[in-house]
Length: 475
Image 1 (cartoon, rainbow, N blue to C red):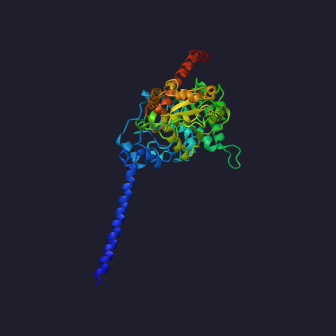
Image 2 (cartoon, rainbow, N blue to C red):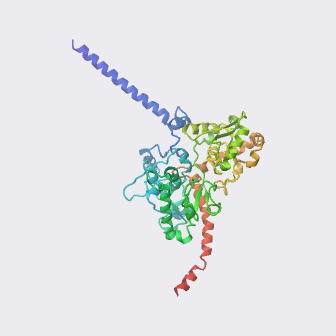
């Protein structure tokens, strides 16, 4: 008689086991649907919208090596394709980087290495500190350039070989100052508690003292040094004392000519915040129903007052999207969708001549309309922006009907020509790690190298009779 209850217990356990196994395979299947990439039942673009945090740092052109989402998988993928480190003798630019304490760079991201460890291990992707997202990310040039230099002497990191790190300063073409000045301003410029000075101000004071005491700085008065100050308010205290150096900037809007100018300094692109459109999936003319797109802050000071004027001129036009927008996750997603559905995207001067909106438009393949008379553009000595952008004087743009008549008069063939050029140049505005030939990091290094040559020419001409004078003094 006892066999019947035993059979029931056995059947119940078997059923529970089968249910558990079924649930396991169901979860696994759902996970695979989202994660198997191009073979997924869910399009990769939709997967990114669902899964990827817009504030994360996600390499665009090398998806097999994502910076923030992988741990052991990254190390394994890197080990499959070992590559030799760059040969410094073959590089376009040899760079000496000061070993500043982590307080000046990755320490600002909360990174703490082992005792006496200055730099994170950039060969292990899981150990690389993340840069904060949102608006902070726009000015992250400092982060990408520093990572790139470190990777140049790290085994098995495939990268562009334009710039390499050298440890002998006598071999350097330029001296790199690894101070994350934009992050320092964004995150550490407020005075805390009972302190008299902010962390950002203290770091700037320490940096000035350090550099002014270096023989390398004294040799040419800092002219062969590279300092990153991409945020327009970064380096506010130190810029007057270190302005002889080559600066990496977003524009010259808040600098005097003697501190920053196009002759000595490098204009670097903002890091775009909208997602990049695949060139093979970019909507053509007919699939972009909106004629003109702008979403952002409308009421600005200084040169940005033109935004308000244009808003009242265009807000009621049926094929124009001109609204206020923010850099929240929802705002960024709306901008991504809106730009991809628009033929022309307005880049209007704000508080400074430049804005991230231009680079969002470029990677959306939405023809930029640049209304900013004082703007300076990245790599303009090698890129002809008129091939893929429309430039309009602010005085003309504010004339009633002028701007819309101009854009409505651009026919499909001309627009398509610019659209094709946008797809070609868009990779030049991608920050990523590791760097790739022709991406934003590589293009910035190339721009630096073009500034270095005339700098060295002037220095060498100045030193023509230096040896003779020293010889006479010694005797």
